[in-house]
Image 1: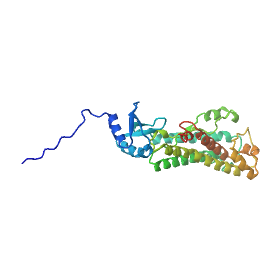
Image 2: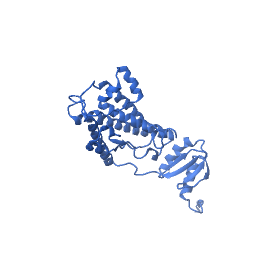
Image 3: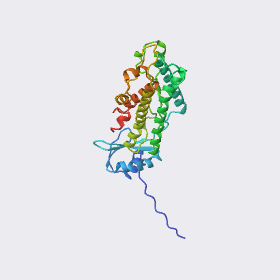
Image 4: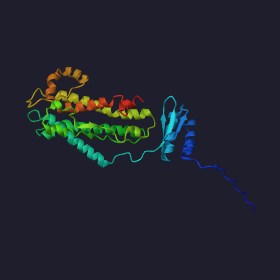
Length: 305
């Protein structure tokens, strides 16, 4: 019995390179003009519908361990890179850094509170508990809240991001044990900076707008919380108490100075007996404004991309 012989399959004479494979996949979604080269395969593309097609392309490339990045400019280019792996620091690193930050925050608060407290303390008689309740907990809680909101926003956009990793400032030990005046206490907060690891722009985002608005969520939380603590400190600040040394002032933003007029309060006297919430608010608002500066890798800089 004669059986029909199957027709042979057409094959390429030469095996495809990695670039050829990626180029063939990309052409299914986005028209390619020419290959540009570079460390990673890069093509000049027709970007009329690139923003709409890029999520679909990355969804396919993800199964192959690759991702595509769109670069806008005089010439629109698409670059393929391997998906990043092992970017997230372990939980042990987070525990170490948050614990160290708690200690430096506490030492910092003890340093500028040693010049005087109300009789009976701000909240309790213990100076350590006063520092924890009035400064350490407000700062750490706000950072945790900002980190949580940032990760939730990115998760809704389909991107996994890391948590805030506070960097403790060990220089507070110098000021604590040297006996120098608080006027030399240039950075009195105990935390040097609050990066997110891995860097936000190192993660695969569906578009630049998603990256920008996720990044800016942290400074927004810091600024809003800072204004809340400025207001609480203004309300809870005592009239006066005995000072044993030069007080350390946390200068408020202009909006809070305007708000103080509603309470018929003069900051020239109130800040000398400043509530611990003032210093927590000072750190949160200062860092929040710094993050909003239009500097590359800062949230404010990503708004301009």
